[in-house]
Length: 310
Length: 310
Image (tube, rainbow over all chains, first blue to last red; front, side, top):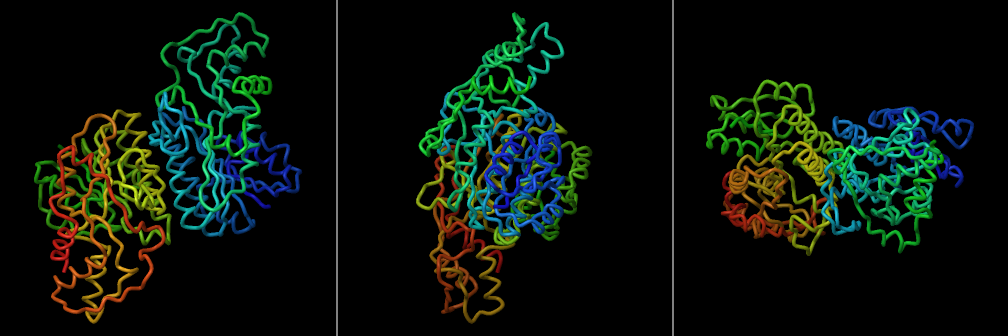
């Protein structure tokens, strides 16, 4: 099948492309290198089944030309601003890179009669729901970050386009995803800080902030398993049923970097930044009942990721 | 207070301005005449407390200049594509006029430290939920129209901006709103058709399509009553607890136009267009418990509207 991966030079997108090529698909990758990198797709440049367009997905005329030229059957949409902390100070980043990319992709799909879509949504659509197990239905979605809001808006227009155009759509709400080619986040920051100055480690908050971390290999495995869905929107929380605290992550990073007795300096408070949700817990029964479980626990995913990025 | 009304030359916006002026506010009206008209604000041109800017709200630089120049304390955001049928064939109308207007307004409010917002949302955010009484919480929002999707996306970013910037926000989810200065919809269409050719009346569907119609005077009354809210987002279904069928509307129109024995020609089917929700019912207990009821029933609102537009 000929597929388009939007944001394919990004962390998750590039891993998904590896899996799609292995599964004998022809892959058209579109990326503007806003967060994605040439290095992430460098290994694919001689692959005959891989084609790359450097363009901004919100340049709808140029995107339309790609759809006109290539005979796309399935779109995997992973383009977004994934650096939530950055957009906390500049919300229009989310308007452009997270919401408008979705709007332009959907409009090109409608015009060119492309019926199959995968969309990467996020736990951030739920907002701060500490103490509630988050299932896909029956929860009021009140995003507190601009990122979560732009993703919820994207889900909304995807719902309408899917209904209006008889599309078959799969939406995963991602938790924190980690693994090789990671570009930011707590593991990335700790490794960077300790490489620069291994005398101590500054940790935002009290270290007790606790989230589920899903390895990108597990996530890609789930996308490949569920990608062929019925007409309508199929929605899953994609996650892992264990969590890692920030302090545990710091310990794993030090351990894997062979650094001993590094003093942890906590800034105090609950950590994170305004708009960050300190903790959440998915109800994963829907995806488990459909026959998929993550192969790695959250701590295992952290360990494997640290090994690949140090 | 100095307030900005976005979409103030529109049907609902212009009535709200009348009430705001009566309540001794200074009103800055912004409209691009996409659907709004000069006629709707003609009567205000000599009012010293009224100021008009003709500009497109998505021209964020020009909008920013308005915020820079005027000392706005409260924004009433009623700008949107309100012609849902039109955007069914051209979804990007909603991207631009319904979603992007919201994004640009919020960003200007953030920059200029404006903390108070009223937003006009819609029953269309719920999607097709026939048989369920729609309360503000606990219902999965699955819009099927591009319009409903853009409004839900707007609610989402409003939620994030409100949280991130300590705003006080009131959101009303409007049903069908009717009254003087109406620009489209079933009453408007019937009057127009019968003026052109009173020999018969073509009715889309089987005439049994049944919705609650709220008179714009009642709606404006509710906005004025609830506009001063606490920090955070306060959300109400604003509606009326009776409905009018399309056939009843046709009868009222004929009656008021003194047309007798007009044959109704039904096109058959459930009527409307794809993306239109054939019927819905609000749970109005929240707004009723807060001390507000519509003064007119749905049929009374239709009667009064027909009188004002024939």
